[in-house]
Image 1 (cartoon, rainbow, N blue to C red):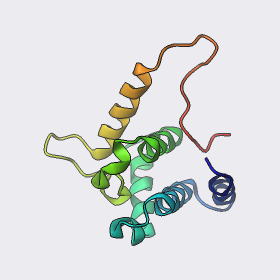
Image 2: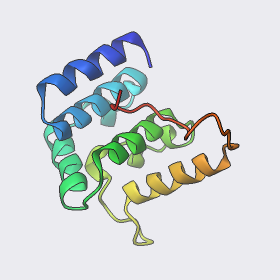
Image 3: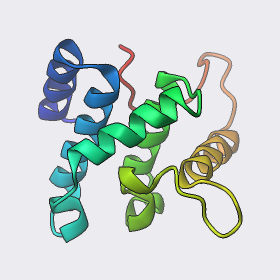
Length: 132
């Protein structure tokens, strides 16, 4: 994480509701990395905030998990190239197989963690999260 990303993240957390902070962090990080895509450039923050809030409240997902999954999506070389999985407004939508896009990202993240060799000196692999 760059100094700018870390500063933005800390500033956002201190001034907003958590679901708004997560949506803004994700959108701004995406814009910085993928600004050439119109869907990224013109992402609607209000819809992104609503979807993140629904994932947390309606789907009863822990905030740390949401942050970890979104961080995984931004950092994973495969998933960051999948535009429909990088749009917050689409994460709760079900694909043809009946799984939400969020669930697929979560599963991919868990599989990626399982591939990592176990090191008794480390508890888990850590993706970039808000929990400092």
